[in-house]
Length: 170
Image 1 (spheres, rainbow, N blue to C red):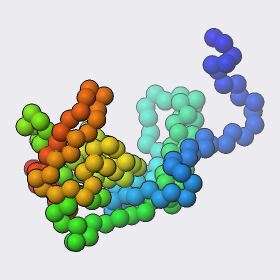
Image 2 (image 1 turned 90 degrees about the vertical axis):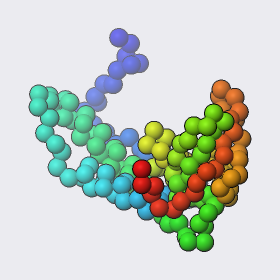
Image 3 (image 1 turned 90 degrees about the horizontal axis):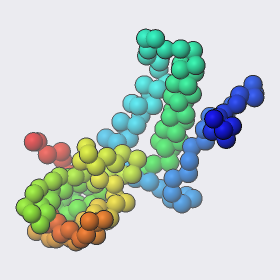
Image 4 (image 1 turned 120 degrees about the vertical axis):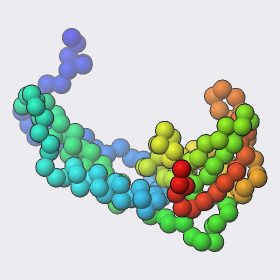
């Protein structure tokens, strides 16, 4: 294997992998109160005792420890940078940050997303980043309004069928 693909240990102290910069300098990222708590809980679990892994070699343990430290450093920096934004009662009925939005697509299929910050976004879990094209198109919309979003497979039209600031009970 080429030495370009290997890491040789010079025996010196290695620093943690630096946290990569997120957005523009001084630019605040928003997060929901629930997202903030989830990041705090993840950080606390990383700072706690490491779970024992059966059959783990010393090298594997070292790699896992460095990865936990890197992630903890990243989370601590993120928690310092984000701004927690809770929904306000005056927003009811319109799509803003933190809203659960139910959409109907052109085929009549419904999907519900929560508009969240990029640090808590997970489309598969129904959390859509406020920076995504769909979320940006939805901001300020009300029930009955439609948006058209360009996707890799072509444009898609969505109609807002419900907006709520409390979690839906499915």
